[in-house]
Length: 386
Ligand SMILES: *Cc1c(COP(=O)(O)O)cnc(C)c1O
Image (cartoon, rainbow, N blue to C red; front, top):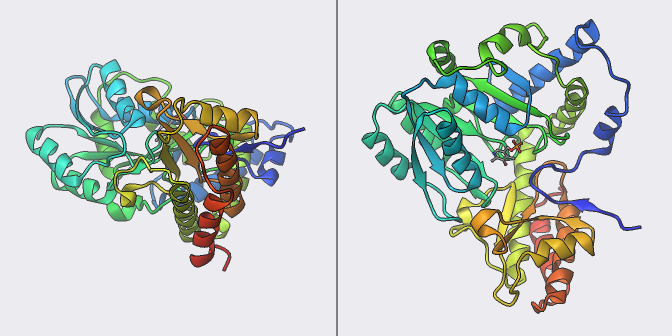
């Protein structure tokens, strides 16, 4: 027997009490019993999104909500500005392409964030663009984007701000209403601590107005149709009933301590992870550490290891600790340690210990315990348990 650990940026581990929910018999959705659950989940989602708007629940993965944002806001002939700091930012451009919408892409090197000045420049050159589509946390590189500054620019130029917060919502501060974010999106298998299968999207008043005249074809993801019924605790199509029941429990756990506490915990776990990696003589992918996302840390494969793909492979196969490597051009060049969702101090130290053993086995000399010690020291100094 080998005990296994999941330290990946989706799916993330599921709390035991939430897991138990999925063993219960299925209920029917057109019943007062389902409506009671969904009513409470709707209120919890508004707290999570920091919004008074309805947060729509869709039976889809996160990409489904990205697709929904697109078809509900754009019309043929539109131009949009997409921010590509990695694979998920690139996806906005691909979605635009699929619908024949012109995407003006700002692309930066892996490990860099995108500045408000770069976005301002693109807005000046494309004054008629429908909106700016971005990630709050670019999961493929572990980079955070300056959401508030970008949203401010969008407001100034009357453009929509569409924020994929799939590894940011519940992880760090994103105030939908206070900052004036037009569209906020997340997914179930990330910080919400349940399996894949649900996506969430909320629209501002301005976004709903734009949606009323958007002309791209849509059927399943018609958000007006969903809004009309979800406010009455129903869904347009069969909801993912069991996932919604589990979500209620997961959100109760998340919100019990409050969002602030969740943001602080993630910030400490991220700093502990970066400190651990650095103590092992490793280099972070983030060019500026202050651009790091507190959801996931991307670390460069050291020059001492020729085949970087061996790191996640050995960690998973030999030590039972699943982490992720790099995607596309980052394959074999980085690995990613995830630290969000149902994750605590001892997930970090476990991952760090397995990483140390893996690196040693692959010929990268590290002192056993050096990464763990650095991580613990951050956790203690920042008072995670106090
Ligand atoms: C996981 C993720 C998505 C969505 O992926 P799905 O596989 O469709 O759930 C989108 N954006 C970001 C930033 C993500 O981390």
